[in-house]
Image: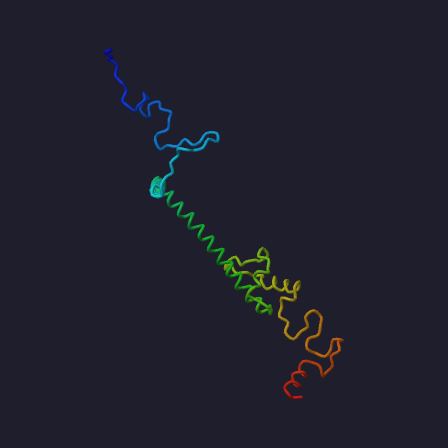
Length: 195
């Protein structure tokens, strides 16, 4: 028997260097992905429990990062950031307030001008043409805008008792075949027996 003083490698090692020391093979369970269209035969998928664990860890890390970012801000930077948020909220509130005032003014003016549907009149005016009072912020020229709208589109006004479109309403005139005995009132009287 030959006497061999050289140490033998441990079984199953195959002479490969320990992990992390020049090894180019991926670690167990690691995925390198398929290369040039090769099938991904040996990849492992993660379980639902592992995915939940990773999501929770991700959320925790995001919270820590946000807290670290906020902690790194100086007191003045925090106040500046808060002031900016308050200014944005105020601008939004003022725009909403202006819109509500405009709607109210238009609805009131449309009602006074006898619009068919005063609540929808605010949709018909050009908002860019509206002027506002500098002190109170109320619209100043809404009635004039609505009058111009009625001039261009007279059908928007409720014309009770008048003629719409040039034709006669309810009377015996108009060049048709109606006579005094054929108007609506005469027909109602005949139907009720009050002829």
